[in-house]
Image (cartoon, rainbow, N blue to C red; front, side, top):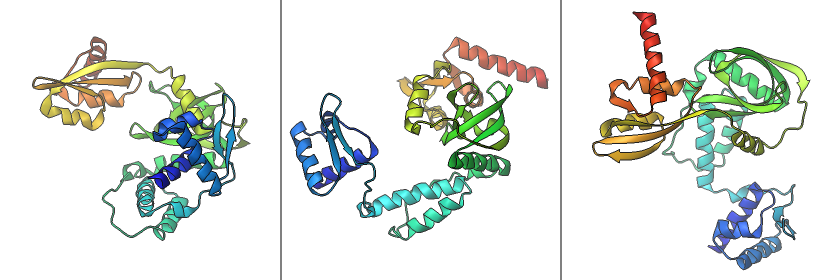
Length: 301
């Protein structure tokens, strides 16, 4: 158990910068004295751990130190294979294929009970070309321009410095620095057109992507609906397929609480597709969905 804790503590230090003894004690459910002994053991074993004293003190691994690959076991390799195979179905990237082939030589050849098939994102060739352009811009730190359509369909010219390609909410997004607005924003790849890579490198040294995502979440100005949906218990599984909300039984019915962005359209279509099998328990959301229904009927009658 001690050896396992030492390994987990070492990996935790690798994945975080300066970590206090208190945080390590809470993370591994041990005393501060045990943390000190474990750090001493790791240091004696040759792990270059630097200790800092004072109010903001703690421990960190020297920047250039690398973990030996032997620390990964067969189950770790199988997990890597599952992730890479899934990514390969989504992206036509030769580097992924090459990495996958290398990893296969290290893993035990056992059939995995898990398979990720993301090929639906790879079927549209134009869409795939956009993905590849964004990846190239990120890897080469090139600025790019595009015509971007927001959720209301309004088009605008954007000059971006892309930092991350992110799959979220059933779609690909780009986390990028908007040079005109001088802030980080999330852009949906499906709404990007006329993408061009520029012969200009990034104008600033961007923060670590984890810090960027935290700052974006803290400064999120997007408006959301908080509302409840009621349906029969047998229809709850259909809602659960697309929405992950807090469920509350009500006799033969289920009440599902949802927190969804007002400007997005996809979830509204999902709810309308349920027809009379659901009841929207919010006047504002119900009114908006009814307006959409009336607009559709007026256009097709």
